Length: 215
Length: 220
Image (tube, rainbow over all chains, first blue to last red; front, top):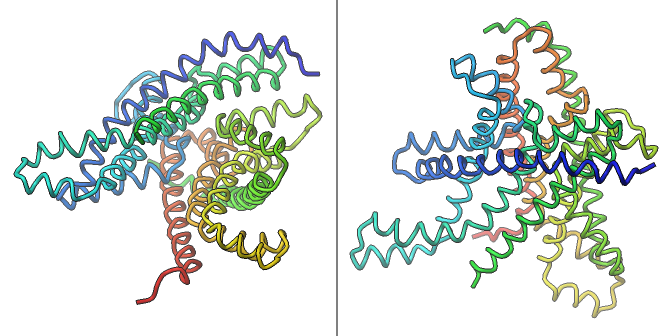
């Protein structure tokens, strides 16, 4: 029935493929942080057009399944004349999708700051830019860290979808492995173990950050 | 861009849409039911059972839905679990959603003031009556926003079922695009369609939520 040997053997190739899972989710969150900051700034700006744009951006990316976004990006890029490798297209899509969630996380963190702090800072004559760089942003970033780790965990899981466009990450590698060994149960369970291990580590980091932020 | 294919493939897409909605509703109801059972067992069950359920929650929440589907659909037959794509997809959705719902129910139950439960016990209500008359009604109302929210998230997860060949909307759209080579149009329309669907469902959900929790808002 269950072959322990196949199960254990699957870990080698899948662990190699985990590099791509980490690469896609890691670069995805890095890109998401940058775009998310811009979208968050747009959402909080005084310009109505920018706020509208940010609202549409967030609503579209949160309303459309990532799998559809991936395929859309895949077929859209060549049509508009951008030819990038599949891996880059996958990272861009994951990053753009994450930006919508990250923008909301940051907006929430900034909104959670007591307004008395910025009012007090303004009252004693601190310049608006200094208020942002010295008072609002440092606190908001620290407060948002646990939520960002959570987002990274979601991205590690979401990165399994990029297997559909041919990236050799854990899921795709396990499909190949299952096809050659004819033992899908053992191989997919091994893949599940790898995801679980990555996410338990990340969850541990998240709890540690939460603990530190609470102190 | 060529749009006439949508007319030609209309009936097929409509069927796919039906399967998507069916999977979403059934999956949500079943996952919610299983989640509620898990949450209650975690509250009242013996310690080993609680511990086991916690492991279940961690494992399911720590692994991607797609991998869970692969284990179930391709790995299942090895241990005698032979399911067609659609039942496998529904079972997958149920398993995938249940820990999230269980956690939502748990925090809903925790939001019930302890004093209410103690008062019920003090006047001699039986434990089942306390669950039925106090814990569930109060807990469910405070869990409602999160329940609506996660049900909306599950709409989007249904497209992943297309990968194990459940004939839902995404599956039909991919079939259409490989037959007609209209990949971009097909996926663009699918994206816009899901955007509209999710926006509509969230609006209806928010209204429903406001209606059910109306009695909690103080009238001025």
